[in-house]
Amino acid sequence: MNIFDNKTCYEIYYNTKVNGKYMYDQRSGIAILQYKYNSKLLEAKLLKVKFLLGVGELPDVFYIKASLKKRALVKQKFVLEVEHSCEVFIPDELSCDQYSYSFRYYDPIL
Image 1 (cartoon, helix red, strand yellow):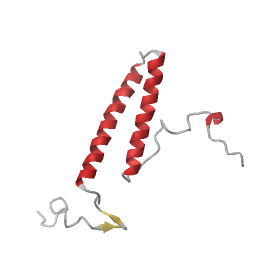
Image 2: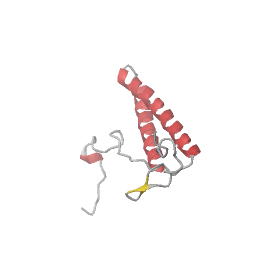
Image 3: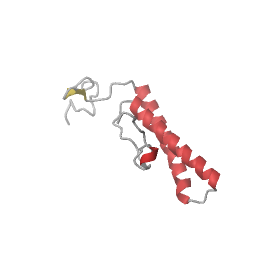
């Protein structure tokens, strides 16, 4: 057992930089815990909505509301990850690639 193991001596390696970036997250413990809680809560809500949509037995109005709720939850999760400086990829639900070209942004200069 090494006395300076990074799993047992966290405070020694707290300010260590590798390739110009800190080895460990520099936010407070409360901020990290709050981020994890909010992230897990959004994931649980999103899982429920995806399950309802996957079953496919929703009437028209409820299907539209569930689709809008799914999009809103994905957007909230995306914004939460951006705010906490996580590595973020644009989810498929927020991407414009699934729409036809007439729905995409049109730049009149081009």
